[in-house]
Image (cartoon, rainbow, N blue to C red; front, side, top):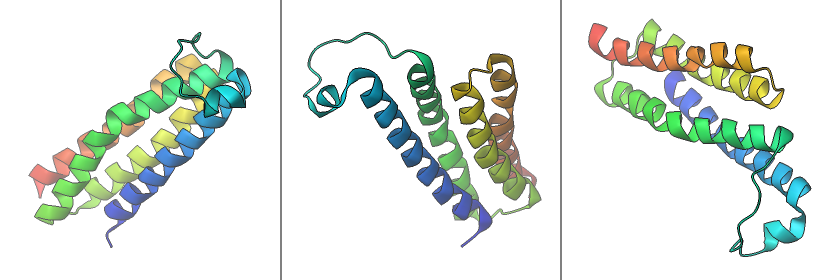
Amino acid sequence: MTIELVLLAASVVLGIVHIIIVSHLQSWQRGYWWTASSREHSVAPLTGIAGRAERALRNHLEIFPFFSAAILAVTVTNTHSWLTVWGAHFYFWGRILYAILYMADLPLARSLVWNIPTTGILMIVAGLFLK
C-alpha cells in the first residue's frame, strides 16, 4: 500500500475519532438522554469546546472529499511522487493540528494552520500533472 493510501486510511480514522469526540462533548453539554433521543426538537447551538469541536468536524467533512478524490486519482493513475507523498502528509498532520487549535480556541493560529492541509491537497493535485 502506498504512503498516500495509508494517510487516506489514517484520515478516515481521524474523522471517526473526531465524530466520537463531538458526540461525547454533545452528550456532556446536552445530556445523554438527548443523545439517546430521536432529536426531533430543536436545541440551542453547542457552546464552548463542544461547539468548536463540532465546527472543526464540519470543516473536516467539507474538505475531506477533495483530499480523497486527489489521493484516489494519484492511485488510479499511478502518479506517485514526492509532491503527492508530502501533500498527503501536509493534509493529515495539518488536519490534526487544525482540530487541536480549533478546540483550544486559538483562532488566529487555527486560521493560519488551515492553509497546511489545503496546501497539501494542492500539492497532490499538482503531482498529478507534473509527473
